Image (cartoon, rainbow, N blue to C red; front, side, top):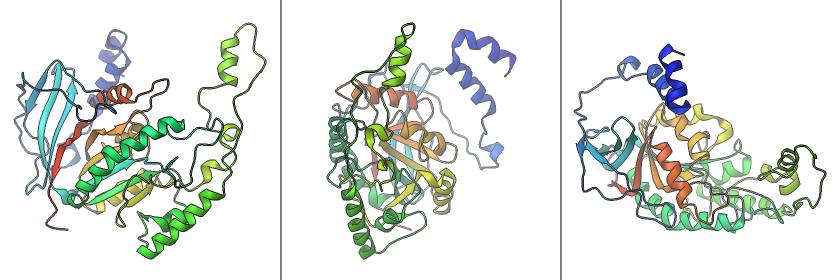
Length: 364
């Protein structure tokens, strides 16, 4: 760590010190041997700009930045077929920076992080009386299902013919049942094969006993530090066998039923690693990612197909209102989702469902 960073850290906080280190060690385009182009990125004030993220207020609290600026397109492909109005936040600009980007659809993939098929009628259910999965209660999972049907699935249907690939990330390593049900990075089952895979998936999920244990009614606590004992013995979140039962996490987790999965859509499995996904996308000629999905603050950020991985290799646009953050202790995800999106805006471009427009691709 440099002397400057050491001096600034106690004054400016850990996050800013990290940003200084990241800026000093980042790899610029010319250092990676890539072709560059001159771009005038002068900021132009947008005094009459409206709120951001205001299309789906049930799921995302609208954002009203104090200052917004316009700048030139950051991504400006020749022969573009997709337009993406996006924004990021800069402390140095003292506000939000908006740009209109132009992408080639045949070099763009839509990635949906963790669209788990839980409590959706396919058979994989939250264990009772107290088991946890995904948004961790059946009631919160119901809000997730509304978001899938009202926001995500219509967006996927509108854009599917405009992008190279539609990819869903799911936990696990790609068991035989799901690899028959869905196209993956390494196999493409026939339509009949997928129907048989769905039958096997339904049967496997139906066989499991979703009954486990409930919260403890009594236990011994330290007289000196009872809160330490209390949270250790009765944690807020425990997805282990006591509450979920043995074998729950070995079941084949499906794509949520609210998504109309096309035969050509792909499932990428967390257990197979980011490098495999990265190499597949690059082989397809993909340069741009429209990133959506669930648990904006966790899975969309840091799992295999999260933006922390993707942003090092691709131009990532996080479609903010096509995500939901976790929202413990709250009856709505909208405030947590806004907070997670604004945090992500320090690292990736943010766009919105309404800000993405695409035409059908004219070439493969």
